[in-house]
Length: 135
Ligand code: SF4
Ligand code: SF4
Image 1: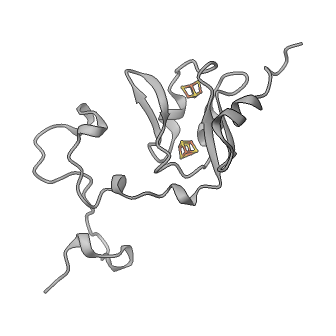
Image 2 (image 1 turned 180 degrees about the vertical axis):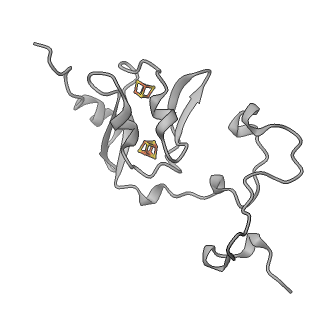
């Protein structure tokens, strides 16, 4: 008997195999339903914790953020959480610590800065740099 796709390891999948993001019976447009209310398939990475790969983590300074959504747009892991076009934080279960969100953040100083994984948020906020070019 052949194995279900749910029981396979990544190296057992054949070329062209489809790994569904959502349950096949959904009858709505996922892009119009909030992420927490979608019917994810078991094969969706939502159920996998991959945050332990991270060496550096992004920290967000809410006082500086202008909610431009650049970080949300460019994050390759959909790990910037946003509601009503306002950033609300990170999905640390899936963020890989690539630093792209820091790169694209346009504020001065940046509203997102990468710190070592072990740094506490309060400690990170206390080390935040001053505005560049100001006297
Ligand atoms: S560090 Fe990379 S993966 Fe994590 S939130 Fe920023 S852009 Fe996304
Ligand atoms: S890129 Fe920077 S300013 Fe824009 S929403 Fe993200 S944290 Fe806020």
